[in-house]
Length: 122
Image 1 (cartoon, one colour):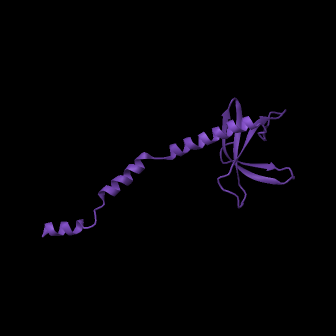
Image 2 (cartoon, rainbow, N blue to C red):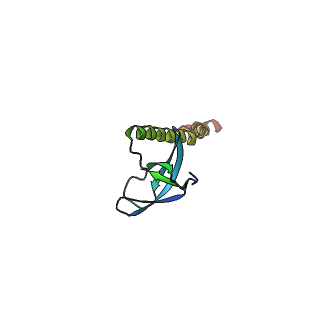
Image 3 (cartoon, rainbow, N blue to C red):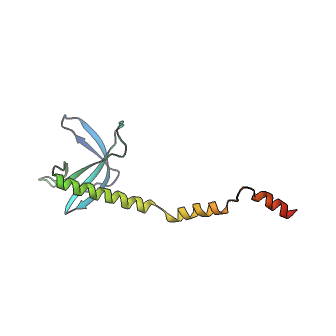
C-alpha cells in the first residue's frame, strides 16, 4: 500500500454514506497486507477503536480495502495487531525515566531531617 501513516481514507458504507478514516498502520501477515484505520470523524464512540481491512489490488493495480470475512483470518489478524500494539508500548517505555524517578525519590529528605541538620549546625 503506497499510503503512509497519517494519511486519510474515505470509505463508503452500505448506505452510501462516506466516512473519513486516518491510516494508523499497515502490516503484512501470511503474505497479505492489512490496513488499520481509525475514525477521523467526531463521535461518541471509544477513541481507541480501530478497524482492520485487507488491502487488495483491483484489475488496474489500484489499492482497495476489503472486509475480512473469514473468522480464522480475522483471529490471526487481530492477534497480530495486538502484538504490534504491545511491541509499540514496550518501545515507548523508557526504563531510564523510571530510574530517574527513583533517584529523585532517594534525594528527597525524610520528614524531620531539617531539624536534625539544624541541631548539628548549632
